[in-house]
Image (tube, rainbow, N blue to C red; front, side, top):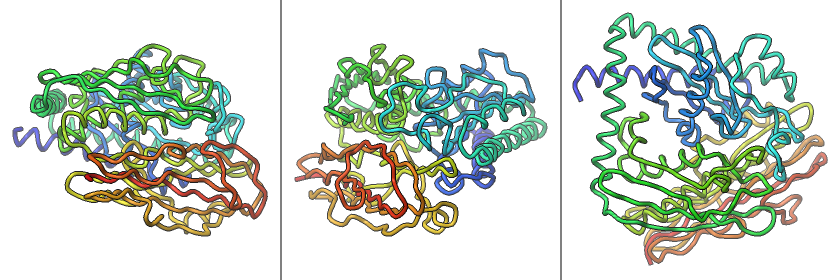
Length: 489
């Protein structure tokens, strides 16, 4: 890369990072302000991602579909458009995406809002069957003051919702200003040429890395844990020359629960795996994804059709897609053992407050090191809510927060340990838990032992992996997250 291109690439990435900083520092809810469950990126005038902040992988790989959906409405400078419809560029309903024009393309933010309406506080019911049960569905919509008022009126805690939307809007105004300044200083032609070359460079680098992998077709399968029974996930990875094709033929059909996801989410998970295994340092632009083709039968679990519910698909199915695609690659190259494979989603709330968090766990060991313990990685990549922030803002008390020692799988290199997190509710509220790896443990690799399965408890009594129920003041919810698998016998 030339020196000028390096400089312009760094400036574009700095704008995306600054957008994220503005969003996080301006947000009202703990989920965005503390956990940083949000993502920011810049796109060129053709709708290709050219720079992203290192935020949430499941958000970023799906953003191009959202930009394409908004571009179909011919957005103008000064306008901001919003959407969350999973079947029109979204992921699941709490993730609200905003798109606006800049002088050299588009700015995009996506943030997980702590409530978007629906029948359960937090909009993450464990037992939803249709999209309408999960909250307000927003097709591409011009986001003016009237639209904001109309949307937040359908959500719980509207002041907090309005504050988080305004934080996203502030990030867009910042992006528009910074891109205009960059074009004025360097010239718009130079900026757009740099965007083209950044996209092309990432593609070249990724193709060069893929070309070093052994050609062939590699298959793997795994299962998801709905409320009853199992759902099968099958992936076939075909490496040929400098391209990768990933096909999900044979995966279970979409089901009556909410583990379904749109193809955009499946693409995000696949892009993440290929980037991690091939060239994790490649500049994060859409060019890095160009050599990867993802297909799945229409109407299957990872390419669902409306009005299928999707609340858990974005968080849990995406995690299992990473597991199964990584396992397929493992037949060709060394890969880490399976990590916890779940985000351990916990939602608590009533008409006065809504609180949502995911909980870290053990990650798989790799050929050269033990797995890390108690972390959010893969499709999550969020932070933990600090105890002080949680207890200050919500009627909750953290009774215990510790590593779940010994939960990582044995092996030449040991899997990371999970987490024990115990919350006491200080007023009556509703609880929803969406978690995985409660029936099937994360697998080891190359003879390593599996990690421990996760476990949920309410008042000390075992609770299922997916649960929605009433809690009364003083009740205690305990989440024990899975450990990672070990590597090597």
